[in-house]
Length: 238
Image: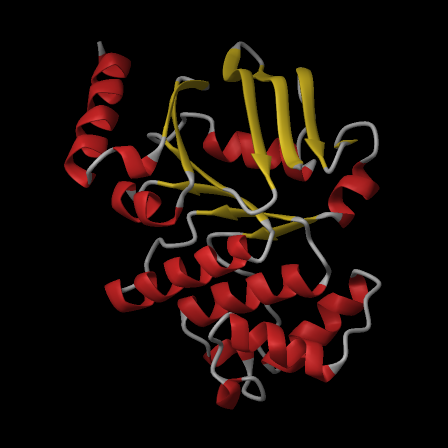
């Protein structure tokens, strides 16, 4: 079942074409990673799905709900993990989870919360500590937990691996795979070609606001994917 869909999604900022007739679909259990240089349209795509900005034309749909026409229904099915996850630093991880669940109209049981945290490999010993003490990897996992606790059918992630050391990045890749395997649709913006290959079921390469290629990461080696990506970026510079 398709959870995220862009239909000829286009965004103009004045005379600048930030996104040009994007067409993508992400089903439950799939992970689509968007690769591209700065300004390629990756973040604009996420912002349109989130309803942070309105499309110039076309549609962004979440579980069949048009984000522009019915933003409340679309957001109810959506989770978002920013590059820097915003938490209340003086509150514990458990208190942050409870607060954001309440905002989403949820009242999850402690057993449900603990099952999600265990699935995300979040250290049980850390849940009572202030979130201000968390590493970036722990903050990313708590952001995922917040999205899963609200029952999000799709989660958008903006550069989730940026700034993580290799061990933490490997751990988060494994967590993202398990999250998708649980039936959640993931749309990930990243610059990390090799981590994208590890986590994605499909990779979209973006240039000048357009999706210029979609590839199966299992069909290419890491060096082949890098070569393809660099070829597209060289075309951008030409």
